[in-house]
Image (cartoon, rainbow, N blue to C red; front, side, top):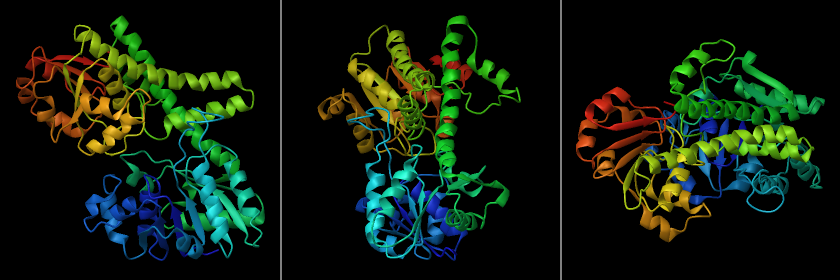
Length: 463
C-alpha cells in the first residue's frame, strides 16, 4: 500500500515531534495529529510557533516548515481516522494507580478507547501502528477489538516503538540508531510492514530499519529502557560507596567507561533518573515477569527502581543533615525542575520527590526552571499522596530567574543539568545568599574548584 495519508492519535511528547519529522521528510504524505485536548491542539497551532506545547531543540523550526502544508493538528479525531490509511496510536500509557497490577502494570484504557474508536469509524482497510510504549502482547488485544467490529474492515497491527531521548528527540528522529517495526508473519502483515518501511525510507537508510515479529518489537522497547535505567542505578549505587570510601565516582565512571565492552554512556552519577519511560517500563517488565511466575527475574529488575528511589531520598536526607539536621523555615533554591535538560517534561522528575521530602521538613522551596511553569510544578506535587494544594502553596514558590530564586537562600540544589546554570555569575549568587552558602549538585554539573574558591560549601554526588 502506498501511504499518502497518516493520522496520529495523541499530540504529546512522542506523537507531535515524530509526526512533524515525518511530515518534513515526506512532503507527499498528509499528516494529521489529533487529540481531544483542545488546549494542547491550540498550542500546536499557535501563530507563534515557539509556543508549541513540547519543548525540544529544533522542533519549532520543523513544525513551522510543514504546518498548514502537509502537517495539521486537529481535534476532529473521527475525520482524521476515516481519511487515513495508516494510524499511529501515541497516547499515554501510565502505570496503573488502581485495581489489579496497581503500581506496576501499564494502564491501557486509553489504548483500548483508541482501538474502539478506530473500529467504529473505519470504513476501509487500515494499518494501525502502536507507537506508545506498551506491554508485550498488547497488539493482540488491539487486534481482537478491531477484528470483531462486524463491518468487514481489515486491520493490520504493527509495533513501531519510539527510542527518543527527550532533549535530543529531533536529532534522534532525523538520525536514528535504528527504526524497529514489528508485524505479523502473514503476507498481509509483511505488506503492512513494507508500507511503513517505505515511509521511513524517505530519510532513514534501509540497513537501519529492523523488521521483526510483533512480540519481539514490543519487548525490545521495554528491554532497551530497562538496560539504560539499570546502568544509571548501578553507577548511583557505586556513588554512595564512593562517598564512604573517599573514591570519586566521576573518576570511577571514566575508568570503566573506557572499557569498550562497557562504554561511557549512562554512567554519570546523579540524583536519579526520571521521565515517562524508564520507571514505567521497568515496572511493566516486573509485572509481566511476575505474571509468568518469574519472581527472581521480577526482583532483579525491581531493584533498579528501588535503587533510584533510594538515591532521590538520600539526596534530600543529605541536605537536611548538612544544614545542621533541620531545614525548617530555611529557603532552599532548586535550579531545575524538568527531569533532564532541554525538555519541559517533568514526569517522574527527581525534583518532585526531593521537594516533597524537604517540604515535609517545613523547608521553603524556591524553584527556577527555564522551561517549566509554576502550574506544572504544583500539579506534579499534587499527584503525590502526601501533598495537598494547601501544603504546596505554603511550601513552594517559583521565580523568573535563578538570581531571585537564590537570593537569601541557605542552600542551592541543582536538580536539572541545564547548560545555562554553568554560565551564571556565581559570585553574584553567593553574595546574595545567607552564609555559609551550600550547593548540593545533584547532577555533578558545576565546577567544584571554582565554587569553593568563591566560598561555597560544595557537595556533589559520589565524591
